[in-house]
Image 1 (tube, rainbow, N blue to C red):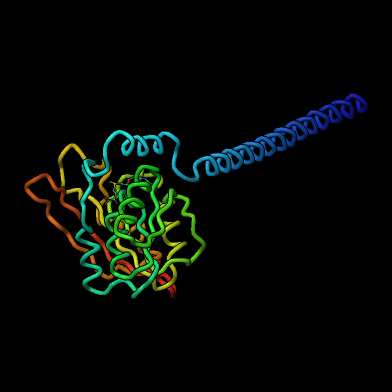
Image 2 (cartoon, rainbow, N blue to C red):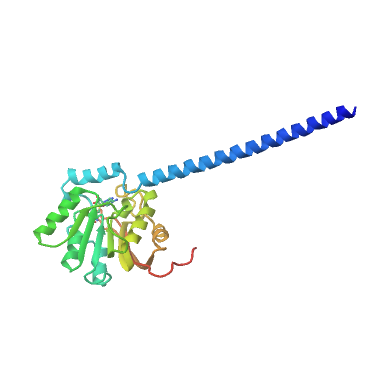
Length: 263
Ligand SMILES: C[S@@+](CC[C@H](N)C(=O)[O-])C[C@H]1O[C@@H](n2cnc3c(N)ncnc32)[C@H](O)[C@@H]1O
């Protein structure tokens, strides 16, 4: 009887031990699985991030084709002279005198030419070879010195804090929503502390079915740029009757001190 009791107790202990071993094995393997999934997720995120640095090939082709198919001065956004926000910034002496100012998505270069005429070191980048060629040809006709190259706003070919300022007239608002943060990072990187940035974009109040699909709100612009830029001034320009879209502009200064507290 005692032997039987001891045997039963032994069996009980053994089954408890087995259960414990099973529980531990389950835990270990699920922890292992969890870590494996984490590693896979991190790898995928890294792969996505690196393949998504810069503009996607389809978008590049889209912009390249615009200038290849249509003479630059017949494109719907073309203005022969400088845009209103850039003229205003110049009139208000917003840009540092003779500073290096980059036009991001410069198109056929009207703003670059204007800045070169006014004595700035005028630079421009655009995804489209046709746009770059147009800007260079126009500058050569006027014997203006400019530096316009093929380049991507999402991977700007400039070192950190290299520029005294930048402008963007109609490029930012064409970017897909998920790429706007990458744009902000790049612009914040290349403009030196206390450098200037003038951004102009088609307003949400412009409801025509042509134009950029995602027209940023003032709130979206603030959310994106406030951590790295001080907002000196924003303005709204209502569009003309001839189909000129309503737009917003913002005059920004690259922060050099601490950021504002989080919201
Ligand atoms: C609406 S047009 C405006 C052109 C010019 N800023 C103007 O006001 O006439 C947008 C321009 O941005 C360029 N662009 C679009 N995405 C870009 C990117 N990721 N990097 C550089 N340029 C880009 C296009 O090729 C095009 O010339």
